[in-house]
Picture (cartoon, rainbow, N blue to C red):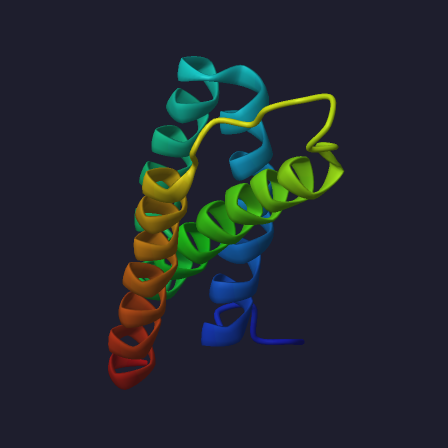
Length: 110
């Protein structure tokens, strides 16, 4: 029987769930944020909580950064004006860094 508590599985599951949650935040606003908070509570109950939450934060940050970069790239400068998203990029890039830091801490404990 396979060991289902391997550290990599917790992180990868957190990453995948985080990417979906990132889309939920962009599409659902506050409701999407509530989904992320519930998923963070779920991640805390995983066998390797630091890895699960680290993956969740990396997934959320990367998902939102990717979606906003895609939206900006699709915006034709002649026909649309996108707002300045520098603060949002900085915030969600910070989530990625925080998630990577939790990942390192989780790997040291695993």
